[in-house]
Image (cartoon, rainbow, N blue to C red; front, side, top):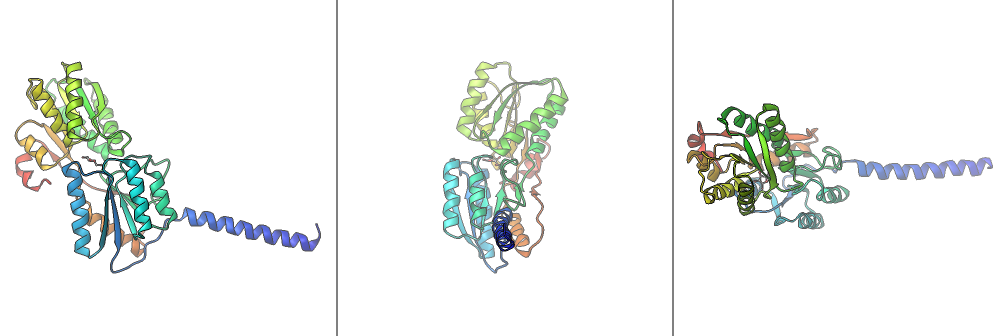
Length: 327
Ligand code: GYE
């Protein structure tokens, strides 16, 4: 190679390298958010089939209105594929930021990556994505939500103290592949195994839905007539399970203990009525925290990878007093 051609080779190689580097850097970097008086914010909801989801949407919408932000809302009606399409349509509409409640941990990864590629920051709300496929601070800004492992653990700890000899558990799991279902199971199963003396006789998904929860509880109560505890990953399935227990001629809360997570008004009332024994709240009022995080991010603050919501706990000792505050 002559000196000249060698030099131009090095120059060319450097130029290629710089382009490649710029390419990876652009891809590796989280999209920024400008500080503005108003924003066009997208909220991609998973479904609207329960009071928890309705309270969450209400909170996101009301707070956006209060701040004078434009609110672009989609409801995926229980379909991860629709939710991916919803996020793509928000990208096409040029929203400033997307709040995404990923229905399941893996199928929403392409949506997170598409927004990132389009230069639109994403904040995950209430559910998380698979941590081996996308990361806070790299692919999305942060995850705002409860500690689901802790929620499951709190249910197990209450049961270990208050079981009074009851020990055969039917577990009604949330939506398969969703972070709250995975983590509420993990937290509960580990803590109940550690407590000792309990058996999970069956564990099956009720998809976080009332009617599915009732049907699954009905079938599992028939298959396991000696079951004396039902742990449901959310209120809707717990309320469905109450109907199944009554249909089986048993008394919910007495013959069969019922434990739940969410803490909506109907469930807290069921605690007052003695049909549910204990509920861990999962706070759905995300609005204030969501937009406060948006503002901090726009200001250039370093955002923690997980903005944790704190949850209350309801049992017969406080349910009547707390009823008015439940959503
Ligand atoms: O418990 C349930 C809802 O993702 C934490 O999803 C949320 C859960 C909540 O449909 O009721």
